[in-house]
Image (cartoon, rainbow, N blue to C red; front, side, top):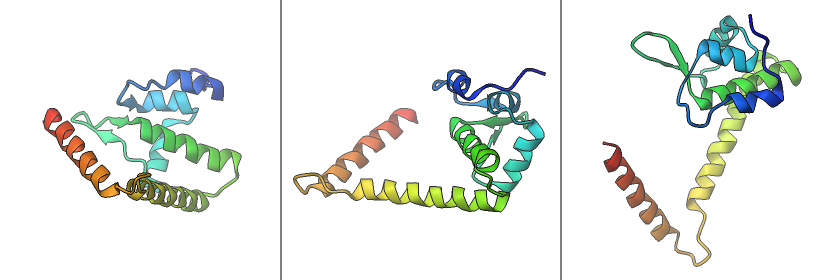
Length: 131
């Protein structure tokens, strides 16, 4: 079995262009065994690998980042599974709150409605291109 990657090697093995990673690749990057990843998937509902027609788990970058956060909470910070769940839930709530605040933040000239309308139209255009 190959050695787990060191923390400074992890970023170089995570490609920003790849959409999915197989469980073996995630195991190698994180230094966690596949059975641990499957267990965490059952415990932490925020880890949701895509299962294609082959039923093989395909992890996204978001899942990989969450797994690394959970690993840090459990192995370095000494959290229990329950404590790590609470911490992840709190972090998600904080991120959602910050994202909502950024969306309704007013522009310097006070034209937030116009900004949001323009943003909505741009997103609709992107969606049409993808369809």
